[in-house]
Image (cartoon, rainbow, N blue to C red; front, side, top):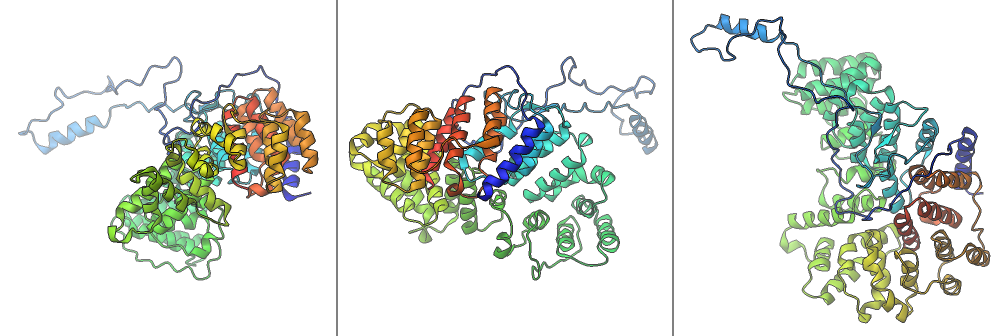
Length: 598
């Protein structure tokens, strides 16, 4: 049994024993109108919190009736300093009401209708068990579209489930987002809670979030209350950095020295040196620190965050010791060289952190900074030609150059993401039917399913196998011939895993009957209906109409770093479950991605 089977089975058994799902009334869930709205990968600004039900908005502060108020708020120029001091003293006695705490019983920037999965996303599931699933998930996921969907589930405005406190529930969601590379999204969640309501776990995740964003100043509202709850050295150093950033270098230096003396045994580790580097960058900072990475064997969030904040170059070898999610964090870093910015942005787009539009904008910004004499033959110029060439032949020629040939599946997929909107602008023409596998694959990376479907007749007439398979699973309503005979013919002409994925996806979308698909699966040597405890939990979540739980369990069924290790039977279960809870558009995009990336 492969490693992913062992891991999924262990977690599924634990969940089944704990009774993850409870029977609840069915909740309808409509599919979103747009699969990938413009700017979907960009940070979402949460609306200002509404006052709790029955509570009026806070009124302007009024002075206490017990305090004598000066007759005029203005002090005449001829009055002396003594009178001014008396008036100032009187003003300090005004009683100012404290701001009301924001409610945290239901937190998340995405509401139903604007990308959220609705209040019933997790239904009556046990919060402690949901948290356990989130904590054990290996992220990032191999699927860009599954990651996009999981982000939506985690950012959905949902009530705190039973069995977990509200701050810890928010912390678990934010922590999973961080491990997916979604630092901006994690910040949306942790900043939706007033610091006075933080739990120790939320303090920890909030620190990780600020470090992932390369933003030590984000620790400053947390440092004092966190230090009261925890004596971890990191919070002592955070207080020192925040003192320096507030223009108090003396206090900062004293705190640094105390931490080194009492906590670090007098040593000057790389972690302490990086904190000193931040202190030295503060107002009136007097510490000049040189960072040497010799002997450092691991890149941690602390080292990444403080080095990024102070523009200290991190050796490439250390990035190889960190997870792929760091590419998502780096994609937002402003100080990267252009060559690294493009490479990082491509990886982040494949992860689902950056949208296709954001990736194109990144290329455009790099091109704008280049000397025109140096742009010939560069990827940014080729991309501009793909979108704004003189004629269609020039644009398609540039797209072909970008698609190129590569042995790396992730690089090929990044090129498709990059050209999605350019591909959507190509008119249907039999002369270009040979390009349809790439054109249609590119459109599906951005959810342009209607644009891709326009090619159905041309693909059908030209018998373009790969393009036919993509349209068979990705179109809202297949306009190409879909039957067992056609699927069998295609599966026999391609890589065995791609054929298995096609059959699994068509069965999951109910475009082949289970009987037909099971027969084909037998010929292709895989068991379509294999699933075990994980599959049972997924079915129960579907029956309970809990799309959020379905998305979480779907992610659990993808515990691997590469599509080639996702079992076809898991793809069938995932696509089927998503379709049955109203997430059929996303199910189609995951199916199309599976065929594109193997």
